[in-house]
Image 1: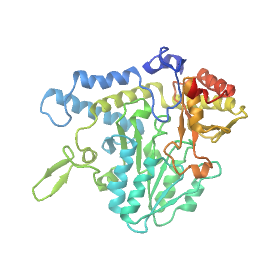
Image 2 (image 1 turned 45 degrees about the vertical axis):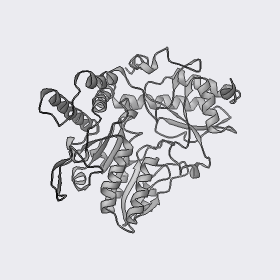
Image 3 (image 1 turned 135 degrees about the horizontal axis):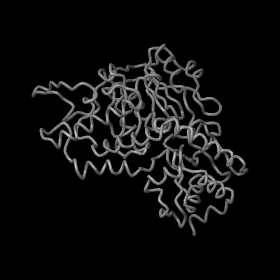
Amino acid sequence: MFDVYKIRKDFPMLSDDKIEQGHKLVYFDNAATTFKPYSVIKASDEYYLNETANAHRGDYDLAYKVDTKVDVVRDKVAKFINAKKEEIVFTSGTSMSINLIAFGYGIKYLKEDDEILLTEAEHASNVLPWFKVKEVTGAKINYIPLDKDGRLTVENIKKAITKKTKIVAIAQITNVLAFKADIKEIAKVCHEYGALLMVDGAQSVPHMKVDVKDLDCDFLSFSGHKLCGPTGIGILYGKYDLLKKTDPFMSGGGNNARFDMCGNVAFLQPPEKFEAGTQNLAGIYGLGAAIDYLNNLGMDNIENYEKELRKYAISKLKTLQNLIIYNENAEGSIITINVKDVFAQDEASFLNSKGICVRSGEHCAKILHEFLKTVATVRISFYFYNTKEEVDYLYETLKEGGNFLDAYFN
């Protein structure tokens, strides 16, 4: 039984004493970051309180404990997405993971007139690194058309891809419209044309079961802080043969086997060759605890609960005549709206005055506004600890309307 009220007791940020603007806190900005359960906080603290040492550096028992814990967490991550342990690279987050592939693979192998395919719905982290690849290599960037709702379809991939396409970089679930791409079928199309598929999993991995072997994607990136883990820790998955061909994004201690005064360097094998310098060890401890926590809840249970919550929210919000809903039929747990004749930031400030946390603006998808025909939206994003009562409160607040300027002058 998925008991959301019992689950909420695991999160200090959801305690009854959390008050915003005189109201009980309602947090609907989970697409930006998620709250952390006590078990994750305890695991991160364990590193600082009892096991502080550098990994893969010391010949003493304390360091060995840290080495072992890092290895255990790498194995947990691998099993979480059905990968091999040697295919899991620790990074600082999704942005670093994508940059690693763009600079370590894209710049190394792409050449003039090669093609990179993106969509208008991509997050900046999955656009700007490819702009740099284009600048350095002379490769071209083209955009796969979205359908009328903003969804990426297999049919449109087939229309856009060519023999010049070398990399297709897309989100499994986009961070504004939250449509779910059919990654398995898209991977088949990409591989038929000899292109690699880079998947941004920042908004999918925390919310649903992801099996990289079944999907057959070439690279997948995601962040710990969006799945109840600490900030500053993320994952790059890559097929091992591709990781071996990819250059490290950074060099330094820990990722080389040897080097000499003439500049000859021998790097370690993946994943260590991408992990120069001291890693975010407390973050790795916390990430392992976060994966344990999600596994205990069950990813299918999480996905089903969030679908039910989103369906409930849509049924309520669509009755409001003053509301524009941009993604009513999306699969992800994001609802993107605007209140008619109210600027998005003003509406978000009004909701904040009632204790409701949402995000407003372009949400780092700065070319999507051309598709949406608006410069900013309000994003409501759920996680498994949100409740129907919180949705009801949001609905009543939006229904009440009120003068949004109250947010500034009260």
